[in-house]
Structure formats: C-alpha cells, structure tokens
Amino acid sequence: MSRKTHHVVPNSDGGWDFKKGGGSISIKHFDKKQDAVDYGRGVSKNQKSEFIVHKKNGTIQNPDSHGGDPNPPRDKR
Image 1: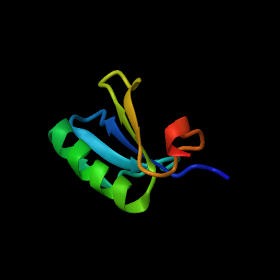
Image 2: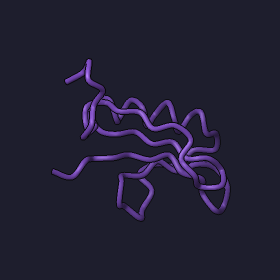
Image 3: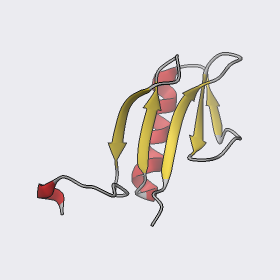
Image 4: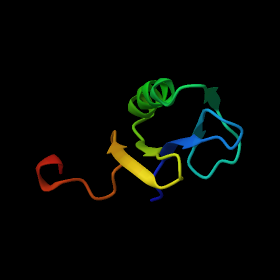
C-alpha cells in the first residue's frame, strides 16, 4: 500500500507551496512558510496523510504522521 503524503516546499520564485506527494502542481501558494505549514497540517489531518515540511534548501525539516505512517511507533499499533 502506498502512503499518501502532502508537502510544504519552497517555491523557486519565492514563498512556499503546498503540494500533494508526487504532484508537480502546487495546490496552494503562500508568502509565509508558517501559513503554508498551518494550512497543510489541517489538510493532512483531515485526509490522514503524512505531512512533510521541507527547508529552504529542499531537505526534509520535520515529517509528521496523521494516520498514513506505514511504520507507526509500537505504542500506536
């Protein structure tokens, strides 16, 4: 089973984009990273997906699972 993911990524023209995992088109664009994270976390919780926030250089800053984690911690199984 493939996991559903959502990402907050830097936009090359400035600002931050919220995208569905594997998608090339932005679902929504934000000027501020925190606004993108707040919006994305809500969508991810609603859709029970993995939520992955990226740094300005594109590396992963902090992933967060909202139900789609294929390897949940032992106390969550």
